[in-house]
Image 1 (tube, helix red, strand yellow):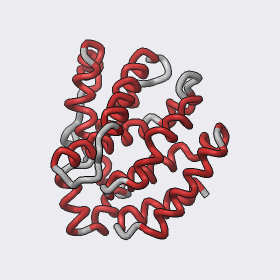
Image 2 (cartoon, one colour):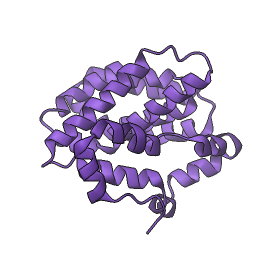
Image 3 (cartoon, one colour):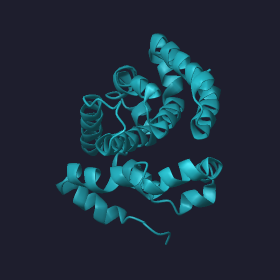
Image 4 (cartoon, helix red, strand yellow):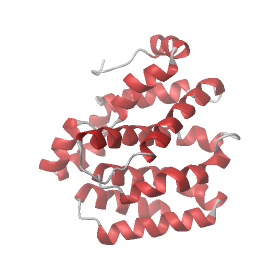
Length: 212
């Protein structure tokens, strides 16, 4: 087995008993940008980018294991679990949005990483959310309220994640809310011309293929 592999059946039983604690202490931290990511981002951004798109790296990544568990738990026949996950992720978005993130403090770094993990979680559930009669209509509001502001985050990894999650939902935003889609397109174009961090610029280029 690859390292960090999670037992799906054991996790599912634990999740049913205490979904919030497991999301908070296991899944979101595994999905979130961490110290190793930061070190690579700062010292070798080209390698950070390469690892992000390397299939072999994905097999051994704890993030891949966390995504597999999350998507497995939130399948189409498990609406109650999807509701629990989305409620938790919405709480993270609200809590981080209430924080002034402009100062480069350790506390803000923690919040930025929580946000990164929550965005990764929502993006990983894109296929399920697009098929959901409950959540699909809420996608434009989610973007307007919580995702659009992340394009101006002082944290590069959050801006990069904004590009990635936008590519996951670009088509549904185009169909459901042309105004939101155009706002998204403008923010992507603004990052392309203004951002100087290589992983963000690569994310913008990939996002443009989906957005515009």
